[in-house]
Length: 334
Image (tube, rainbow, N blue to C red; front, side, top):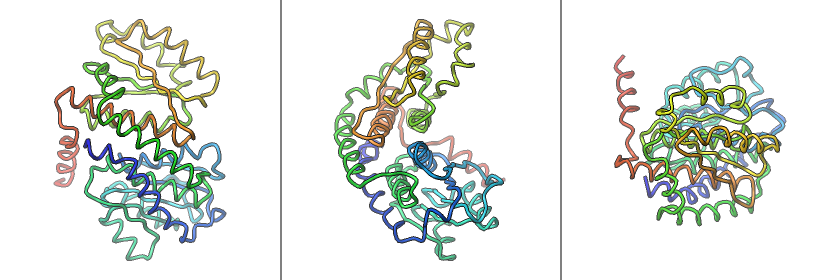
């Protein structure tokens, strides 16, 4: 897992290169009134990142579906992208079949499996990514492909130079965090706590989710999260009467970005004043980078490395996901 996380910048570059195949597909943006990415877990988060990066400029909606069925609006003017690292995720296969019945345009991103076989059998556009990793550790590949696809569709404006610069910044961070640095320090502060991840509801929404999922799968620890401003309309009250012995096991990680709405920036500060005295710690990290993509990657990488170093502190192997495998095996026997 250490090697896989360290290789994220190289995976991103390779995914971006492979995504160039989309330039040859017949994907004229004016053909579609919506783009939907189907996936689960680590295979879906790239779609979330495309959605949040494209939110400010995409001319059509981008939605991510984690489940067996598609929403009712999907039809022959929808592009459905099936993103499954293994190519065999049952929920994604089901949603992909649903897309076929509705006459939607379809595209596959996978390392192989049944999805690739279906794409080849039907002559559908497909982009292959390298196999051999845990799906969550292959995010660089799937994200690179989806971002390049998003550019071809006019969903995001990402010149090659911007992606190259963001990947170069990511390489510098990978070398630093691979030795520990700020990532190991923050992991040490979270050791023995229940992490709660807060961010604004815009650019960093998907990063927030990635942090929680990586803490779950790599560090084998529960983590929860919420978004500003919504949490100020409900969750903040939950800190008032929760027993102090519980609160002293909670540590807040606040993910911040300079593009957060000015009122959201104020909400971070005021919420900290209210919450910090009641919890084990409040840890703020700021996105850094030359571009919006670069800033997203900065916090994405930090979260991945924090989850790794927390696994080391807890003396657990970050790679296997035994509970998931047990669940899958049980469902397969039903």
